[in-house]
Length: 637
Image (tube, rainbow, N blue to C red):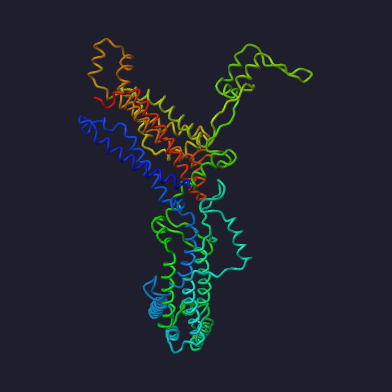
């Protein structure tokens, strides 16, 4: 129901926003010509259209629309897949799915193998002439066994009767399959067992814990159509098993095959260890003979009736699918439900692109403190005593500079605190105050690492970049150092930084600092060196000091470059952080995605991608607001 409502809302939102956009275009001012930045302002309706298009594409290709509007379709397609799976092994023998009979292909292939083996034996310089004659004779005998299997006159009545019996079973199944009363009503006990099993099998969608997860298709038929196809699949499976147990081994073939095996065995036992190559050739001849023996080779017209019955059943079963075929074609793009043995699975985009409804449920589980991911929620809060924050901010050495000594225990074993020890307790947070909620979780850890790395890069990179843009010594001295490490990909630095500084936050924050530091230096330097000389000369003529020129001319002129560099650095920091958390870490978005990848948890992987995108967007939107407030002159001359 939720998916249905969302789909209708998206559809009406897209139509409404497009109509609204067309109306705005018609009433647009004449002076808002092409190229005017004013034309790019606003346009929230187009943002809605773009976002809706992405969401609608996700709903469609993840098969969530199919799940919302036809929740039983996956179960019914599972039963159809079971029929197709049972049919496939039989159809594989005929020119239905293939270009020719399987028997024809095997005969052609083995004749080539026999001829090739004969040429190798004839051209071999490592075996005696008498061995060549013996081996070539065995090859001729092996080749002569094929006509013994394809001769209609040698086909045994028992084998022919069995083929006709199986053909009739397919014909009867085709007739029964079209009846409304098919499958026949089961006993009350069997029906009760099926109903009980239905209660426990769950619905179509994801299941499992936040760490171990599988995509499940309900395999027990839930509808009347599903019961029909399930029953037909079971009957076809029996027919298929009986057919492949059947061998066209008439007495003449058995006698010829026994003679070949006995001759090869006797020949190889008489060779000894000195004629290994001849023994290997004899073994290869035996392999070819056995492949022919185990293949389902029949006379050319023997299976015609079975072929026609299979084609007819396939036509009927497609007809009986009815509207389900159109659901499969239009609502299961890039794949369908397939069967492998007794189980069914999604094959196509629905497998690797999780459904929004399942992803939302998984996201809610990951947010729960009692579930989370590896017992840590994506984002939550914990109550922390303010004393811990005070202890983190206040340095311990403050207590050391207080006059006096720390207390010493008395003879009765007690310790009386004094002013020095009380200040130390405050500096270390060893006291009780009141508790406040503090964010925690994987998202918060990643956010904090990026924020700290970015801020440190700005604090140290912007002043150095301005200095390099204004001073030839600074540019000449620092430029080689910066350009030496800047082109190196962050991933190349990651193993070294993490090895030296450890896998905790220090190593990751320092790596992000390295990324943002070089970007901010380049941006600030470009901004400072790009200041118009006329503005600087005007400032000098008005009597401005160096600090005033830097503060009111150079720095404002550099701000667009600096803030653009911050936007670039944000994206680079997120990419680097995920890679660093991939390599080493126990928390963070990258760590979550890395673990999810190992267990093929596609919902979790897409959740991490979405979270990273939203956090990056949050940073970017915040920066846009800062740009609008701090440099409103940008792009206006």
